[in-house]
Amino acid sequence: MKELIEYIAASLVDDPTQVRVRQEWVGGKARLELWVAKEDMGRIIGKSGRVANAMRVLLRVAAAREGKQATLDVMEPR
Image 1 (cartoon, rainbow, N blue to C red):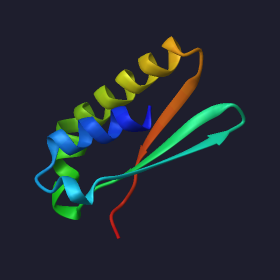
Image 2: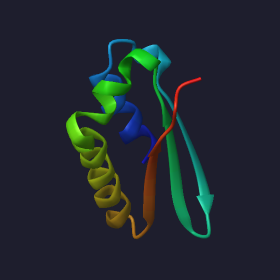
Image 3: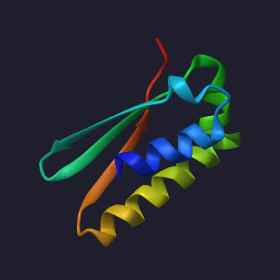
């Protein structure tokens, strides 16, 4: 699941070297955190959050195929 989000994010941004994804398991659910360069935040979030929500849907489908649950948080760049 982590690789899926990394692939999608790296395909969308101008600087794929700045894409970082951290996955942790909380209570049997995967929680993924995504960081990108500040300049690429708009590309990841999209108009009205459509791109980020589409990534969340794809993540949930991939997790469901494995019998798991997952969430995605887009983190504020440092």
